[in-house]
Length: 191
Image 1 (cartoon, rainbow, N blue to C red):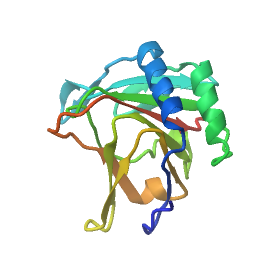
Image 2: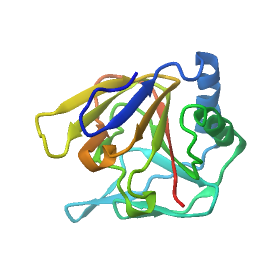
Image 3: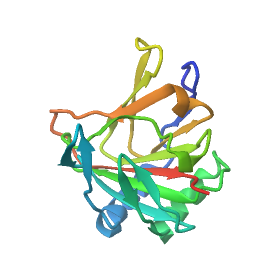
Image 4: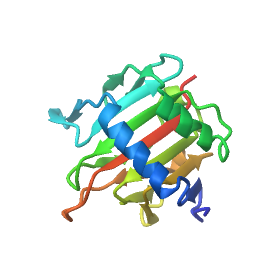
């Protein structure tokens, strides 16, 4: 399903992975990924990042965002399997994968764009959701009233490409609802 948003190229693939397969990947990644919790600087103060992360790559290229520099671990069998499936819809040649582990509704990812220099001019980001469904919010950078949200479901893929990162911010907001764990895999190219 293509999102009809100006200045974007965003497509949502629900049920990209069958439920049993997605659940198996979730269980495997939760127990085997090298999760870490970095500190981020917000208005001069350091805070624990409100989620756990892990970075894996094929070419040993670091990834930096919000003052955090991550060195990748080598791609493992699980990530390679998932990436191979994604190339059916996005034949891109992804080189890295940033994993995010949202332990509950208090874990979040604030407003941002994936527009870091090392991702290139029009990055392609393939975002795989495993576990608890969470709302993904989008807002246009210039047209402040232009907003959208979509529920990212277990086993789904959200593909963002073209000029999306130039014109749109996105986030996974906090929620007070009692919810389960979610793992998000963001495949990207760092040449």
